[in-house]
Amino acid sequence: MAEDVKPTRKNLMAIEDRIELSERGHDTLEQKRDGLIMEFMDILDQAQDVRNDLNEDYETAQRKLNMARAMEGDVAVRGAAAALKEHPEITIQSKNIMGVVVPQIESSKVKKSLDERGYGLLGSSARIDEAADAYEELLETIILAAEVETAMKKMLTEIETTKRRVNALEFKLLPDLYTNQEYIEQKLEEQEREEIFRMKKIKEKKEEAEAEEAAAAEAAAEAADADADAVAVDE
Image (cartoon, rainbow, N blue to C red; front, top):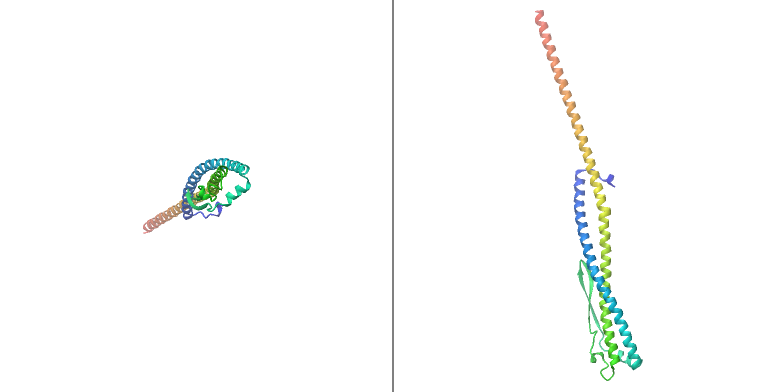
């Protein structure tokens, strides 16, 4: 509360410094918030595209798998899957977007040639190859979706945090500082007026005292002159 602040010049200067610092921080956070929102909208568009691709790739992979199972049988499909020797590898790095650290996922050995799949030409068929191709494409889309979705969640969290900080400065801290500044300025003005009034009274009293002293001195001088005249007449 403003009443809890001691109305001194030193406190006024301290509050003015805090106001300047808070206003700069508020402007910086607003710029960061707006920049984060723009980056988030770009990632959101990308996420929507990836989600659509993910749904399409999943439906295609399921359709290709069902076709391979129908044409070649479950045993052949399971045998082809079990023949896989090298599994996909994922490396997670990070990148900075407007001060937000988001993951950057790199994958390798996802898409493979026929011999890399382990089952070879004789142990496969066109249907199984198409199903493998479709699932490899689906896996790459899943990896990209994981990267984009995680980045989007981190950006959204940072946006909410920044918005709370902006609102705290705009609707709580700065109004309180402005109130305290106004309170101190008013109190200092009152003190200044009181000091001016006090000094004026002191000056008036001093002038009155000087006037009284002058009048007394003049009266004494007149009395002395009268006494001197009386003595002269008696002589």
